[in-house]
Amino acid sequence: GLASAPVAFGATNPAQKWQGIHAGAGGSVTLTRAQISDATTGFVADAGALESGLLYVTFEGVSTPMLLHADTRVCRGTFTNGSGSSSADAGTITVSDTDFSGGSGGDTLVFSGSAQISIDHAHFGTQWHCLLHGGGATTSVSIVDSQFDDASYAFMVSGLGSMAAPAQIHNSSILVGSGGLAPTDGAATNVVDAENNYWGGTDGSFPNPPTGWDVTPFLGAAPAGIGPRAGAGCEATF
Image 1 (cartoon, rainbow, N blue to C red):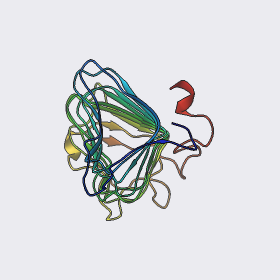
Image 2 (cartoon, helix red, strand yellow):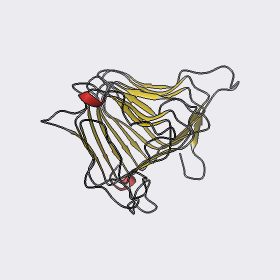
Image 3 (cartoon, one colour):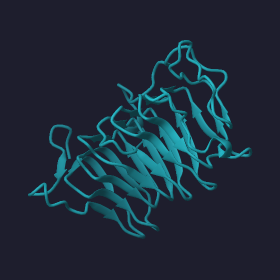
Image 4 (cartoon, rainbow, N blue to C red):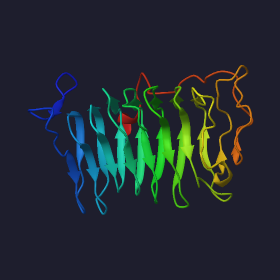
C-alpha cells in the first residue's frame, strides 16, 4: 500500500469477523502500509513459518491483533480503536517504533514459552490492564528507549530472567501503575536488570521495588528520544 492509501483488510459486515492473515509453516508474510480491521485475529505466524515482517500496519478494533508462534518483525505498527491482546509463545519477536495506544482493557502483549521479545522505541498507552504480561524459563525480554504510560500494571511477569541472563529494561519511562501496584505478580522468581529508567516518582525512583528487580541507578526525569521516533527509525533497515 501507500502512505496515502494503505491496503485495507476488513469485513463487509463488521459484526461478522473474519480470520485474518496467516503465515503457514515454511512460508512468510510481508505486509507494508496496510490496515487490518474487524478480525478475530489480525495476523498469525504459525509454528515453522519463516520470518514475517509488518511495516506500517494498523490493527483497528481487532480482537487478537497478533498470534505469534514464529519470528516476526513489527515496525511502525499501530494498535488502536479497542484492539485486544496479542500473544507470542515462540520465535524472535521484534517490535520497533510502534504505538499501542488504543486497547480494549486487556494486555498489550502476553508472552510465554520460548518467545524472545525485543522492544525498542515503543509507546504503550493507558487503555490496557497490563502493558506487558508473561514470562517463563525459556523466555527472554529486552526493552529499551520506550514509554510505558499508566495502567493497572506496567509489567505482570513471573519466571522472567535468570542470574545468567537477566531480562533487560533500560532508558525508558515506566509508570508503575494507577493503583500503586508492583509491576509483577511473581517477584521472587524474576531476575531483571532495570537500571537507568524513570519510574515516575517524585525523584524518578521506584520505591520498594520487587525482589529480583535491580532499579538503581534510576533517572530523575523521562529520557529524551523514547517512544516511536519522529525521524528515520526501524523502516530504514526493514
